[in-house]
Image (cartoon, rainbow, N blue to C red; front, side, top):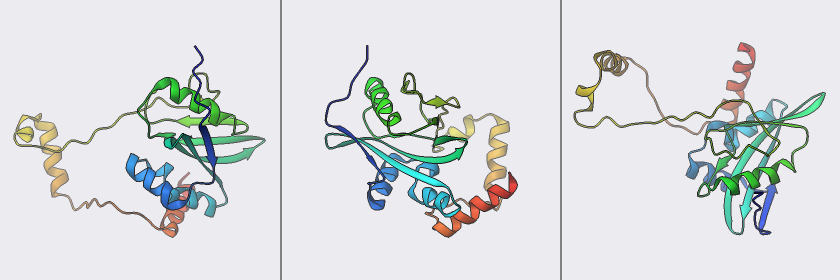
Amino acid sequence: MNPQLTSDVRILIDETPKRRWQALTDAARAPLQQCWTYGDAIKAVGGTCRRFEICDRRETLAIAQAIQRRVGVSVTLISLGPVWLDSGDPDKRAAALRMLRQHVPGLVLTTPTADCGACAGSRMTQVMTPATSASLALGPGMRERQHGKWRNRLRAAEKSELKVRCMRPTREELVQLLLVDEDQR
């Protein structure tokens, strides 16, 4: 079976305004590599960033921020994406990826965050197995039920001076981070 998307499906290439992109990534709790500022940081250090929004009628199915490089052949990386915003129909996702693939030249590599089976048949190369992570709030009684080793590590972490905060870094902060990462590589 070769699922097709409706004729109302379209791909917006570098047309989605920054404010809308940020709202979509915020709503989907997208990874940093799919956020607008990350793409701006890539551009600031000489890279090429393309942004794709796949829409079906008035609904956004997915967004994908792609980093492109030319190393003899055009290579495009969709890191931790595409970010899916639809209900999760694997056939619809596969058809959307095939359509996206038609708009991206050369070799396309993906590192998806979820195994939706959509890469199969899309002529995109999945370069890692999707991973899943979970965050759990420690409720009443959970700490006591933890294995002693885990409980001790949690206590040590709580006593450390490590501070965790959510932030939206500036373009300059991301560029600096990318330069430090490049030096380490």
